[in-house]
Image 1 (tube, rainbow, N blue to C red):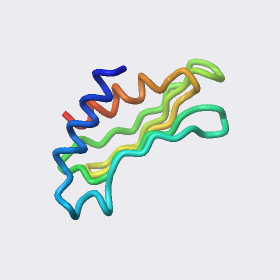
Image 2: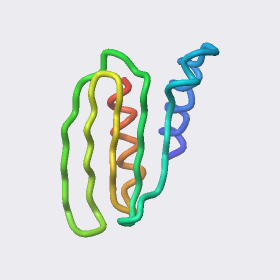
Image 3: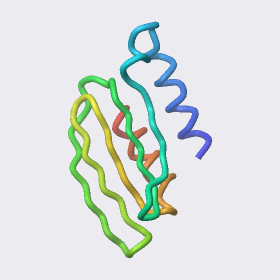
Image 4: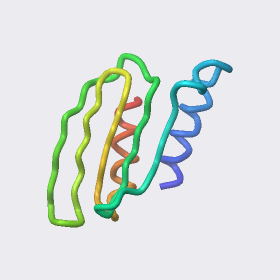
Amino acid sequence: MSDLIDVLQNWYTSQCDDVWEHSYGVEITNIDNPGWRVKVSGASGRKPVDMNVERDEENWITVKAIETEFVGYGGPGNLNELLALVVDWLR
C-alpha cells in the first residue's frame, strides 16, 4: 500500500501551485456501511470509469469516474484495491 500512497502523494504534490489545492485534492474517508470512500478531484483528461463489483456483503467496489474526478466506494477490506484503481486512473 505504501507504493500506492507514494504515487498519490507525488501526483498531489505535482498539482499544487498555490491555487489548485484550494479547490481540489484527495480525500480518503470511512463510511458507515462499513467501508471506504476515496475521492480525487482536479485531474484532467482521464478515462471515464463506471464499475460495480459485489463479491459479498463486506467485499465490494463501486467507482464512478469522469475525466476530472474519481469517486470510489468499497467494503472495509477494499481500501488497497480502491487506491490501486485510483492510481491506475491517474496514470
